[in-house]
Length: 186
Image (cartoon, rainbow, N blue to C red; front, side):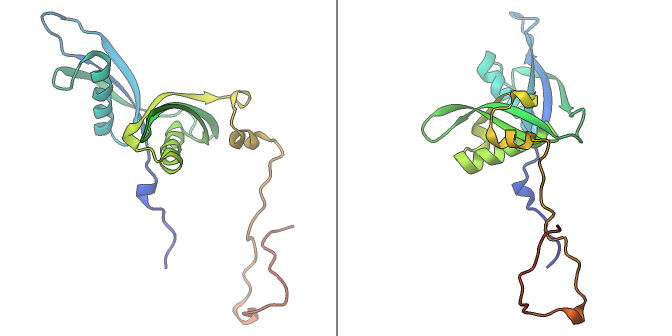
C-alpha cells in the first residue's frame, strides 16, 4: 500500500474566468452592447458554455448569433495568505429555486468556490450545473457572520501536535503494553 492520494474527481478545481462577448452585429443593430462576466468553471470550454447560457437569458444572444471578444483566466494576487470569502449563490433543488449566502476560508477564491460546490453537493444534493454563483467577495474579519469562520479568528487559537512520537527501535517494540500511548507532546 503506497502513499494516500486523493481522488481527483473529489477535488473539482475551479478556475475563474473573465469572458467578454456580445451579440453579432446586424444591420438593425450595428453596435450591440458588450457584456463582461466573471465565471467559475473547470476549463475554458465550460466557461464559454456558461457565458452563452447567461447571454441567452439576458438578451436572446446565442452562440450561433454572437461573438466572444476575450476569454481571460483571473488569478488571485496573494495566494499564500488565508482569507475569508463570502459567496452569494442560487441553486435549484428538487422542488424549488433557493438563494443562499455561504462563507469559506481558503487561500484563493478558486479554492473557496471548489469548497462551495462540494458542500452544496454534500449538504443539499445540488447538481453543479444548477448552481449559479451570483457574487463573491473577500471579507474582513469583522464582516464575517458564520460561526465556523468566526471561531478561526481567535488570535490565541492552538492546535495540538498529534502523533509526534519517536519511532521505537524494532527490538524494543512490543505488541501489547501496560499503559496507553501518549499521542501528543506536552
